Image 1 (cartoon, rainbow, N blue to C red):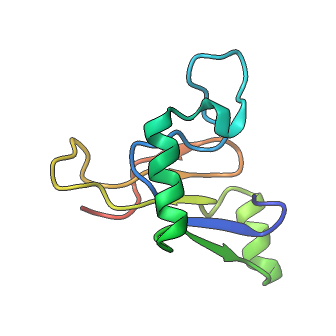
Image 2 (tube, rainbow, N blue to C red):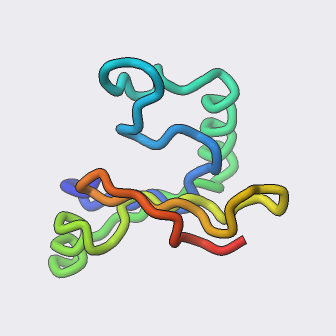
Length: 102
């Protein structure tokens, strides 16, 4: 995503992130998603809830590639969530819970 200048915004909560492993030895992409997660993901795409932002400015692309800015930004947690902030994923595979507030 970062190499192409793509940023995913409002990624659905409680859906496996791209590259995140469930139980297999390596990530198998969308095949790793549970049926419920696939439905939530498809619904987010169909209803324009998940936004794909294209970064073209060279300095912003450099920040994505250097993992100074997140590549995937999860939606704000639901009111019943145990978390107060959403997840953010970076090009180097790091993630944190400093995303959008509830």
